[in-house]
Image 1 (cartoon, helix red, strand yellow):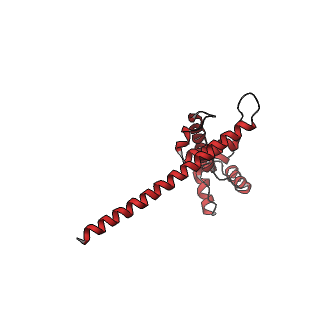
Image 2 (cartoon, one colour):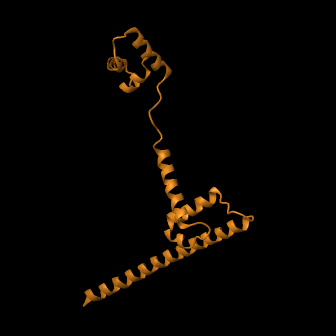
Length: 152
């Protein structure tokens, strides 16, 4: 039965690789645990009597540890695990606030002056008409921007 030996062989190969991967993950977790514990010791050694003082690097390291190994919450004793999770969420919010900060692009001074000139020269024109005239000149701004810079 050649099919059985191939299946048995492939099962043993799968078990070997699965065991190796589990071994690598365990070694990685062990190394990360050592990093976390050594850092906590370093923080405690640099402290003076009184309240624990953490620097930005300490927070970043624990946030990074939580990101790559959520099990680090079980070994952190200097701060509450909920605090580390809160720092992580805060950083996530700050990152996305920074990513979406672009907003409306600024309008050149010349375009603003042109909008104001067109408005004063043609008092019956509204923002849609001035917007259309600017588009004919090849100046692409939104109608809301035209309305924003019209002299009232």
